[in-house]
Image (cartoon, rainbow, N blue to C red):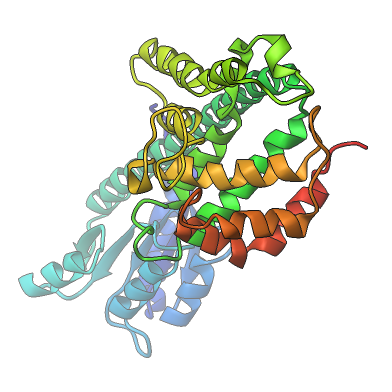
Length: 368
């Protein structure tokens, strides 16, 4: 990561209210091969420091009329465009306290007048080389961060495609479409974001958690791949034995996801939510659901959100065994079962965001 300093491509800004001092510094630096800009006051120095051709280093006098060197340094440090330019004070102030004050303010170095050419050039080169190293490290880190970001985005895309492929497999077996997946994902996000406004749920329903929930939602019925066709595609009502088999899809889905978790050294966080949703999104608030008869807050929050989203979409959609219900009937069905089938808090935000549900249903409607 070493890069050699090239004086010919390096600009140094010198600032002093005395013309003779500027001439000395200008001659010394140009002889060493540097490019030089000069300013006789603080205002001009600030303007030249923020030019497109910004200096790599500033040699700054302290005692100047108008804006003194300390003020110039402070303004340079407060400007994102100039805060990384190292500043060396070159001044006739020789008290120890003066040097300490300058360094405390953030000056890179402190050189007393009259200057010693060899000392000044050595310190200039040292600070330019240090800045070059910092800039190189910053650029290197930026490249690494960009590469990490690119790979994370690529991994997330692969993950999303894999999830959608698995979910589509289950939906295709159930004669559903990928639009059911998109709708239920959108419904769950709407419910979660609305519920996040409630202080009781805000600690859990963070933006990151909601993103994981949305990513997990398509796997809610993955267990249907294990249900025989004659049950899954039956047009009439299922008998008791067939219904018992159908209900096993919840546990089969959870088990499949659990097996995937075991294969990973560090399981993906979304899989835990996906397992909860697949396993318990048919549980009821009053304990009358399946497969475990969980009730109330014993049902994971992710599953309680999916329950409302899934029932709404199932009733609004055409199935082999039924026609779609009118939207108002679906809404009334869910509201009527507030506190029995569904979590009351989830139903409340469903009512609040009902128009969003209708918009999503229209936007991602199945082909006629």
